[in-house]
Image 1 (cartoon, rainbow, N blue to C red):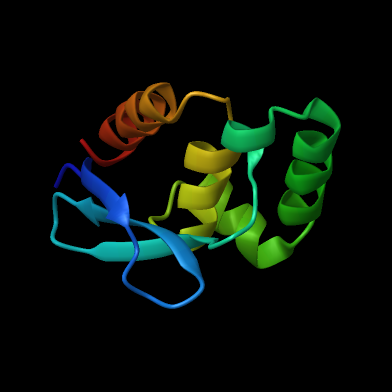
Image 2: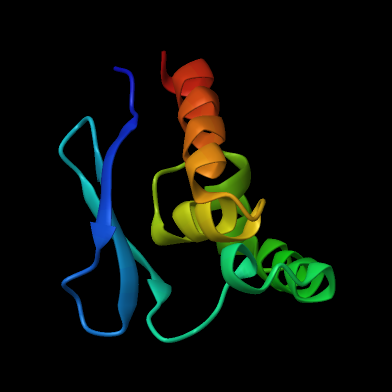
Length: 101
């Protein structure tokens, strides 16, 4: 079954920034509300530190590299992969389509 991001909104959950709704009905809240990510500050050194820190965690590494829909995957690709949220959504949707059909 193909999995795609069909909607992104502000999260209703306390301390979370965004919510994505996937084509399978799953809702994922991610990003720390009130904090800045690469899409905001565009600081390459902070981006590098974020990626090193999160890819250094075995659980997050598995979620991200295996494209398992999760807050870790959404934050990594949507908030930190480039400074353009719309392009990040397109990129992740392509990867999810290639992975899940």
